[in-house]
Image (cartoon, rainbow, N blue to C red):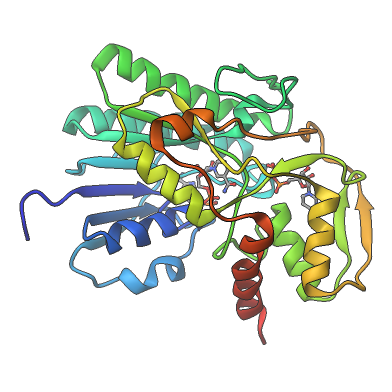
Length: 314
Ligand code: NAD
Ligand code: UDP
């Protein structure tokens, strides 16, 4: 094996986004260490690489330190769905803080570049719309989403303090709502919920009246942006997402039209602190990475629905 081959560590690599990144880096001929505690990830997501000479799988929790020789750390380990991150909120905060602290410590020791998967949630329930990177956010420090939102905010802070104090090479990616194959059927996020409900012939559950908005990015677009960000020289936080903004009711209508237009929409209580609107400004990514999403929601729903059809097949 050539000595110059890039050695990647992907934390959360068995999860939804992480496993697509594993695929891309393996296909590019790089070495990949996938590290996961399998809280929301599954071995089946990376099964095709198990046994490959350039691939290693480690069961590990990022709240504990680990020593590895790597060139690049893609730090994604953290549950992303509100249902999962609220299951044990103290653990979520620990994962964000201690996990990022441990990975930055590793990056510093071995001189690796670290990309941290941050989130649009650091903008909270935004008063500025759409959200540029310069917006500082409106986050409740004590609500049910805080373990995740504040966890990611302190994770960003740690990254920039490691950069300032130790010269650690960091990249901070603010990911907006992403969907695609390999989301869990019981993930709890809206795209998977609606598709699974529609395929099971159940009513689609709108939380509130469905007038809140999100902007949905297809996973292949996101991973392309992630790789470009890791490779570029820009270190400041960067939004990666699809600016196509939809109300949740519009999303339900789209899914219903594609699967079964007879299904009813039912309203359920809106969870506390649920952001009213969310749309990324992606000028920075366009300028620095030459990146913008290619897959509109309408189109990205197709492979996602096909995936869930297969997963739910008896
Ligand atoms: P996911 O839940 O599918 O993946 C997270 C992975 O991290 C899972 O494999 C899980 O088992 C693993 N994990 C969780 N806690 C861990 C721990 N303590 N130690 C080791 N592994 C652990 O979520 P995802 O959608 O793939 O999100 C990946 C990353 O991107 C997360 O950091 C998330 O916050 C961020 N993000 C995702 C979205 C999105 O819409 N998908 C939006 C914003 C940010
Ligand atoms: N949502 C919904 N029905 C569902 C799941 C979610 O109406 O079955 C709403 C949720 O209240 C939020 C939006 O869809 O307003 C996006 O929710 P998700 O959990 O996917 O992501 P996040 O809120 O973290 O952006």
